[in-house]
Image 1 (cartoon, helix red, strand yellow):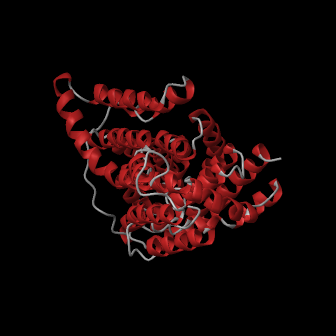
Image 2 (cartoon, one colour):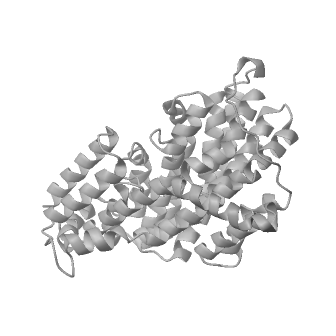
Image 3 (cartoon, rainbow, N blue to C red):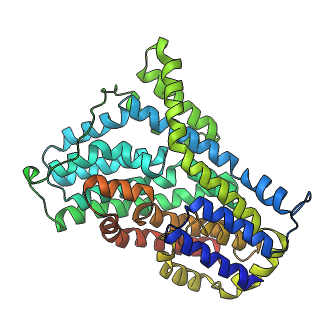
Length: 422
């Protein structure tokens, strides 16, 4: 039965990779197929398809869905009020005609945007103004798009919705997830800075007149204190251990109060919230399907069938863990089996429920892979948007950033092995 489930997972990967089915639909069907192969009854109070997989599983990541919506709401406010655009313009004004300085500034703004909301919205917040600005001062278009992506990736360890997702998906306490993510941040930061400095020099500069930068819409200029908005939730969550949802809500309130006249709070809050639903909708649908998949792989029949197989092929000591999983980094690309926002969630569920590795080790492994997927995967929405907005193919962005993100992922895996494995 275990091999039949693995074969079904392989079919799911093919369906997602070839785009025959959207990822969320493929994962939902995969969850249903695994439950059937595991011998789960259709109805019943426990371990059934209708109740455990479809009903309970769909709501497994409910807390994550709320944080994604709040993060999208805050990101929408930063767009509506001109906070993100003002940050980028200030950086460009400071950098002048120096390509590497402007690129480093946009990279820093991308970190802030990536810490608030992930995926394409974060890339858009920093890139709508940042990418044309970098191209205008001579940064190669591939590097311009890659700079935004590296910044969003560096902000990912500070992104509160990602903390909540890993906590919900793996069953780890938020404090444990936070510790792992903070340890990843320096690797992502150093790799991003190295990318900007090396690639802006290696690829050379292009004259501004030779590049047609995408058109942008100028937002209003936000006050200096409003520019602190993206830092507020991070300070509350990291410095004062405020729970994730209240931290994001305070960020929303701060953005409103510092950018809006008192009589306009309600209108702007409601309008931006409605826009946030458009942004948060696709990931929420994906999280519903991931919850079903997690519930399916944790069914007794599936767990007993998969655990011996996964245990047999999993590296048995810290050295092998670091080497093997570092080599397997590309399997998190193209919606592969180690992508935690896809089939990798099921793999992680088996590693945790089967007791194959300690919980912090699984969190560190999946968080490390996410650093690669979030920047270099040419099928991810942020990579597609940033590359196309810069006028290049997503595959070129992958080739440009992958050497750096692979090092980040490998460093995170090695650190995980040292800290959490004997």
